Image 1 (cartoon, rainbow, N blue to C red):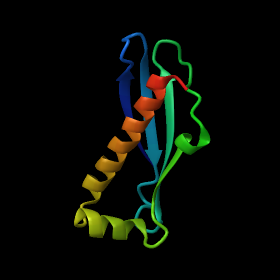
Image 2 (spheres, rainbow, N blue to C red; image 1 turned 120 degrees about the vertical axis):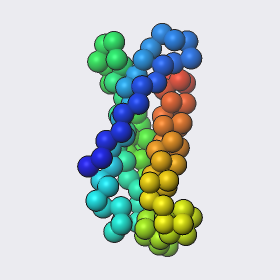
Image 3 (cartoon, one colour; image 1 turned 180 degrees about the horizontal axis):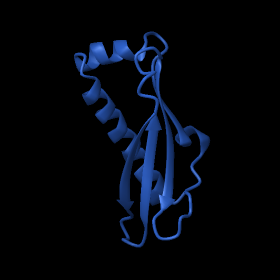
Image 4 (spheres, rainbow, N blue to C red; image 1 turned 30 degrees about the vertical axis):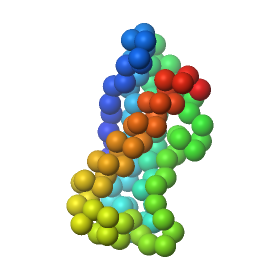
Length: 102
């Protein structure tokens, strides 16, 4: 299981969150979805952010073809670039959600 952590400071500068995204990097070549578990902990207090289930378990993919085909077709086989793009997308959405406060 791969885990990526990033720090996010809110626009107001009052809160720092440690946002983690975990995914099964060994399953990517045999599944249809890129599935990640998302969590955030407020750095100062240890409070966890209450994400809704559709954001806490984040899925990207298509039923027509497996994830490895998506990488082959859209990323010329560059798995690292595809994962980096997906992680950036997840983090942008998570940061926006935290910023809205709900």
